[in-house]
Image (cartoon, rainbow, N blue to C red; front, side, top):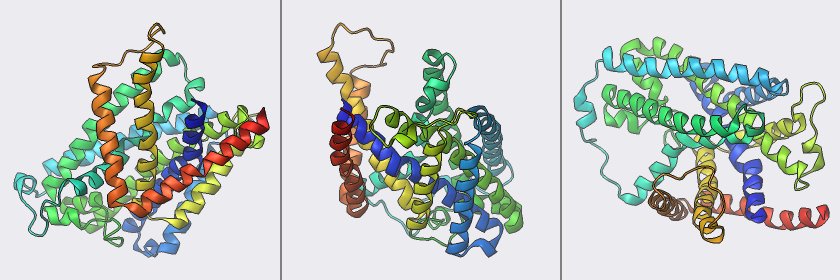
Length: 363
């Protein structure tokens, strides 16, 4: 219904979309620091991240075709770089399959709760799956192309992600992966840079870090382009500030929505680390992924005669399994990361009085 739909849009506006953009920008700055160590201090990394957000937000204020073409070209190059790295790690790196099989000398199995926390971080790699429908009204033959793009996109990410991670574990001892860049090791090199250094040396790995910066920037551009359409659509329905519904007469793009999104993203860059930002995005988003999955069961019961334009494969087992895992993941996050969970829940809850105020105002 409208209440939860509004809260999802509210969450995307304040957390999911800007934190995603901020995380990509922060990740880009981290990769740049690996290439050019003078950029390692946090203030300089933040300055780079802010500059990237501003530059690509302005780019997306041009016609949507401009941002779309840039995104297509960058995506092709990004996939080629990541797949190329995986192939080189397996072919040239002095790694060993024993690294994949080996047990860490310092780490032990931390239990299912910690595993759930790790899954939360890994889900970040897949979270862009829901971005394309946000620009569905600007996609040709959306009825066919949206499902096709969603399914093939997720399968492609699954294969690429698994392949390059196998390359990391092949080329590096587990302890080296464990101590890569994260909240616990903020000054350490990213795992991709460490893996590349095994056959390129430190200098060559630095160049590769520049390529990974390009990859992160590509993802950031896609998020900027698609996410700004959510507050724009809500403003058109009278649920957000009217200024966000304005469309530029020349470019036919919601410029105000893009610029406000850039402002919120910039604030989050200065507020949190990469891992913190991605945890906020995944936790807050999966609350609504669970809700929308549960609506399948509700709608089938309420409207048994309604036409089913799209089939749900394996119903009811597949969505039920998804729902169980999603709820377990969310509960585990509340237990293991209470501070981050509380912040996310407070931001979502802040939208409740706004919803009733905007609804009363619009009626």
